[in-house]
Image (cartoon, rainbow, N blue to C red; front, side, top):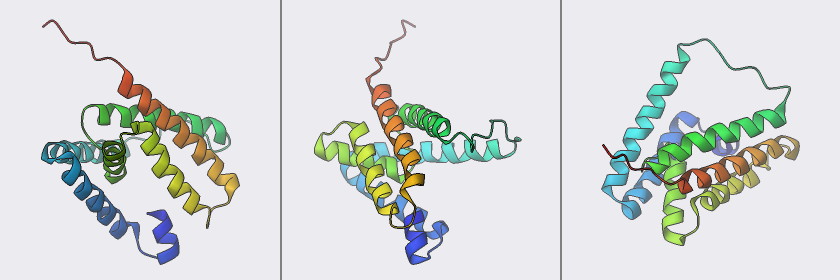
Length: 161
């Protein structure tokens, strides 16, 4: 989205829904209607939750002077959050749906699919973002993709109730 905004000067307000719809269209074709319904519901929940948090004052410490720590913690939060949603059959957005489709078609581990798409985007982003800034994103996507994989492997305990 930001890459297209930078090079084509098209607002993310227009790019984001188009890219999400394309990814969800692929997901519908390869993962089915049930996935699409769950994914759309989880996407709406993420947006709603985000909107609720906008009403609260900023509560986390500013880590802009500690980029490595911010990259690692960001990767942990993204990995855990996305991992929980994907584990339940949902999706946070079109990029998740795309990674799930790639995993379905290639039989790659989901973490590898996330890392593949993220590295592709970061590689293209080098056309306008210096490597010194991209390195932290590389750390974040590496941490998050590994945590997503770990979240998928946690055994589910069934209740006796």
